[in-house]
Length: 168
Image (cartoon, rainbow, N blue to C red; front, side, top):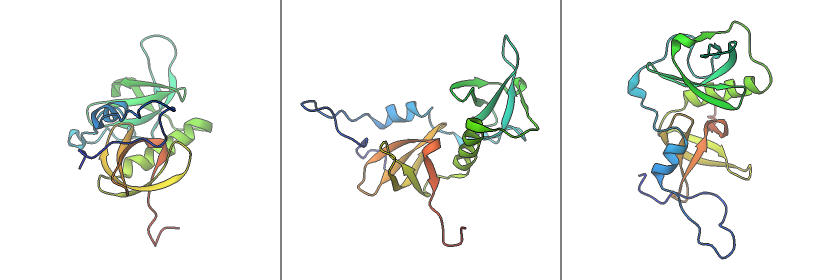
């Protein structure tokens, strides 16, 4: 299925041919394929967890786990810097995140619940909500098949499940 054309919303500047990145390049931009065979992270350190990250130097920093499996955790520090860290360097915080970190935490938790093959909604580059089918989950987003057959790369913060009839 991923051999189909990979397309991005929008056009190339006038006079230039629109370059279509490969699915492999899109997958790499999204952190690589999420290998769900690696197992679950330790309790309290899964995607969306609010943690204290102990670095090599300097004081501990608050962060949000955006990706984790049994082998590794990727945390977002300061809402902007992504860092791969060992679980030994992370400890769950008892308080709740606020501001930007609260939004990132909520988005990471929603993304963690999505599964390949699921119908999803996503915000395109212009902010328009579109529908598609999640075909491949990556660490920081997913490859989504649009109705027109194109595959788009969507970051985890712009991807949601399609509501079902029983959802409030």
